[in-house]
Length: 163
Image (cartoon, rainbow, N blue to C red; front, side, top):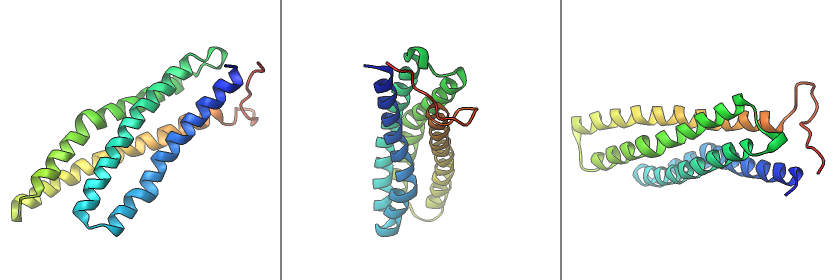
């Protein structure tokens, strides 16, 4: 594959991943809670965020690898560090956050009164952590791509070597 083809494939892979992250946050999750009863919306959103976390894990790992094997198009240390942070966020979401939130969601199903209020508070705290991590991932992916594919310091589009 030529460098131009490699760069195009990398750009397409990043754009699809970034679009999925933002689409889920801006349209899908709010729409679920608008049109479905809260418990069902929470279950569907939880499952979708889990699948997107898996996709983010794969995407960030692939983009980190691709940006290091790009020869003369290799990414800078800063960009690699940013993608490594995004990869780490995806691991935390999958290994700790999602299972913990699912456990709390299941535990809340049979509770009432003060016990339910305590669980809702814990779930709210986990949701806040989840929102921060997801925001880090969304903004980090955007910044990574804009720096990787965007405009250079001299305000010219990033160039691709001729094959």
